[in-house]
Image (cartoon, rainbow, N blue to C red; front, side, top):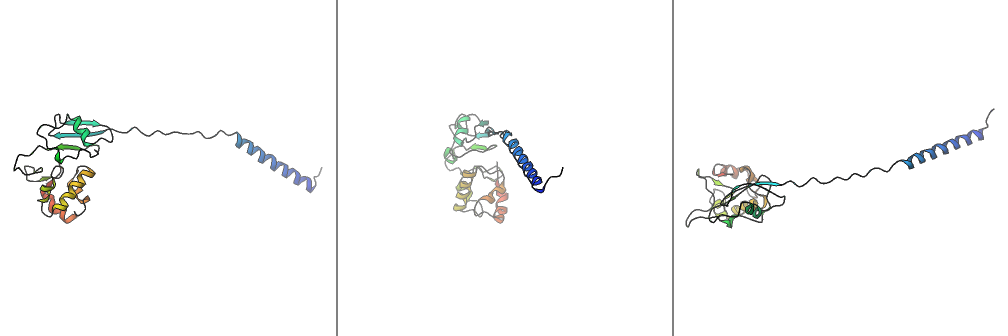
Length: 181
């Protein structure tokens, strides 16, 4: 038996329709893709060291978003001889940070934190003491303190390069006279 040209086309078209229909049926029966829900990892606690003029110096675990006032409270509060005027208690803390509360100065005593070596501690010196460093005037001294209050303590002397107005040459002049504790 021979099929005519029209019959061949009819079988071809019918086969195509059956194949397309079967493919559509298979696609329609496929299960919907599963929905995957990802939970954010739990917020990590901060670990901070609190020392200086506080009731209980030590290392404390605080919730993310804690401020310097929270660390001070965890350490039992400021000691009677603490000078809180240089501590920005509203500042956000960072993991691994050290918060040092300075002692109140006696009358006539130089402000800030001068090490026995004569070096100035960048993390506890006030603007008046920083102003006495070579190449640092009152404006730059205030910028250093403002940067420290905004970004947290200095971790190394080279962090001074982040302060507007301090470049590599000035940093090299300051390096023997400053320290980070």
